[in-house]
Image (cartoon, rainbow, N blue to C red; front, side, top):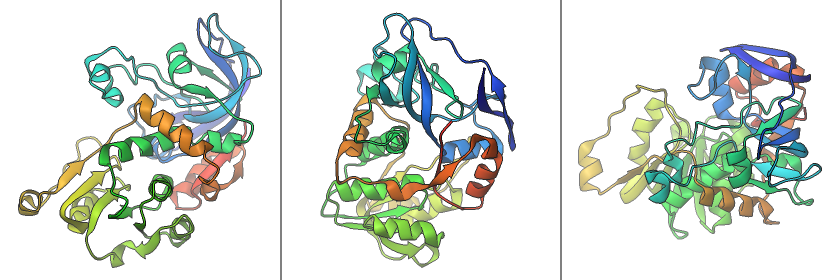
Length: 329
């Protein structure tokens, strides 16, 4: 048996004992060394999530040490690994059209349950999207691979101009990773808008010009919306310069609808993108960023927490306290 956090219903986390998974052919079982909180898990905790079944073991950002493998697995006990929670089939029409993020079955096989002592990584994911962790990279930083891959997918789609100016709306973990990635790619002028002064200060340290959301002015070559707030989705187009791009990254609740000024959208030739998830190229891009000696996301970590305190951790995040907490199950 192992200790784990079970999401029984929105707002109801149970720290309890569950059986340790057994790896089948090609599967990998790891001891979880670091598991991170994230915005998706917060949404699931607050209101549920269609891809996170309840009741079920919670969490999907991880790194760890292999303890057991199934026949034909690509790793061996003792290997330190980093990975993401999904992998495309690489055979459906979307995969063959270089749109792996839309793979018909990308969510059919997932890694769920990182908030536990042990984690089973299914064969398809272990084969495609799990990698050795270099010694110089901490387990905490290695566990950032999944959210950073989402950012890499967004940047891959948006193709920012290093000489252009970019407004990132929302100083949560994803918005801050966008800032770090944009600066890493040489974008000189990045502004970060939000309401949380502590998070804005982190963005400033990463190289962005901070501004309060209510005081944001001007127009930008690219606007990246990272809040998933309907009102801000609608407002965000007002910050886009003629011929610019609006990247709607933050996901809204299913069934939500927004309205844009069609005159601006058409006559100002504004492109709207809404990147989702990631493909294998984005995962490898994110890994390369993490391995670069000048790419440092240490400021995103708000401290270590115990699994037994899971409810308190997510209530803190709900109130805007901290950015990413680290569990060491």
